[in-house]
Length: 89
Figure 1 (tube, rainbow, N blue to C red):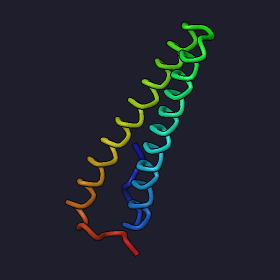
Figure 2 (cartoon, one colour; figure 1 turned 30 degrees about the horizontal axis):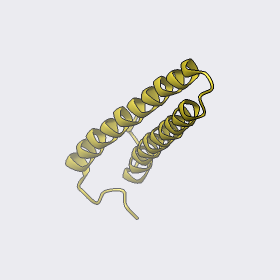
Figure 3 (cartoon, helix red, strand yellow; figure 1 turned 60 degrees about the vertical axis):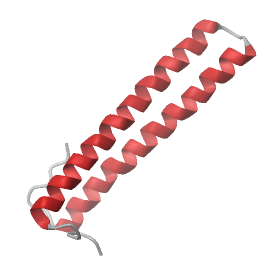
């Protein structure tokens, strides 16, 4: 987790937003890999490759969901400590 101690509320909120952005990117890449898996299975190339792409897609999506949960917990803790609008410009 990012170290949020000893920095201004704006910097803390920026660090939290980086976690959120990272979660979105991981999930989008997972969706992309899922589409690749579907394409591999429809084309009928190698079923093993399509299955591997599905596994990769699942892992990426799980990582994205875990990061989003981490973001929401950290944001709730930040808001409880500093106020809901702390760090917003």
